[in-house]
View 1: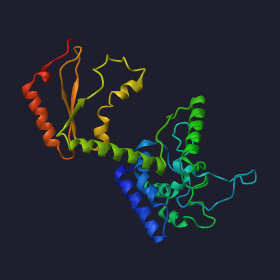
View 2 (view 1 turned 90 degrees about the vertical axis):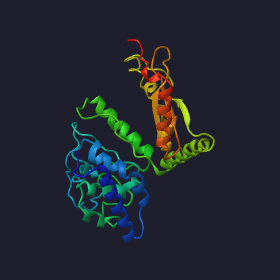
View 3 (view 1 turned 60 degrees about the vertical axis):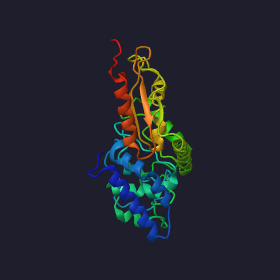
View 4 (view 1 turned 90 degrees about the horizontal axis):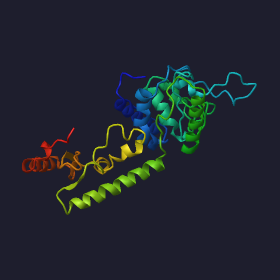
Length: 289
């Protein structure tokens, strides 16, 4: 359900709210807001198909654990709208991202800002480590693995019931450790490419590992389709400029020539591409139809 604000603006507001909370309360999980604000903002603003909140804007206090004698017990899932086969289900993990989740609910209009004043107070449902009764939480997921297995079970159950709602995976919020590992790999790849630019002005490679394949020939093999992007992934990860120009036909089929350069070398690689097209007719060759 689209908000009036863009997801980028919502993410910025989430970070500001969490930062202000940390300053006023002498600490909290600030790093989680830095690593997940965009994902949560996009999910609530664009990605998820969820209804209006069914819970009070200022969360109720903890009403006790679910039991036969506690008939009014409710999870925090109602802040994500009603549980219905026409709507998505949002399984949140890991639970120590609770503060950024509460900030997100506030910024998308599902929880009152006053609710955050209850954070980590005795008797409050707005807990520092989210539980199933905390706003936005359907069940407690202490780790990413628990969250994934929980979501997989619910998704499979929905599939068996042939529910009409959107089924399958939407997004996974990764733990800080996994995010740091990805950043480490990106840094190593970037450094490797930049070291090559100390020896060469540009790097040239095929744009894809194979020539164009027949229409619909890979429709049942999505991995093979994705692998055709593998030659362009390094430039995207490292954030360096790259262009693709036509090369000679191979087996009477088009082949792309990728030119990569260091940061801020857009003019250089475009001039090289232009020079290649001036001395060759590759861009004029057409495959037989």
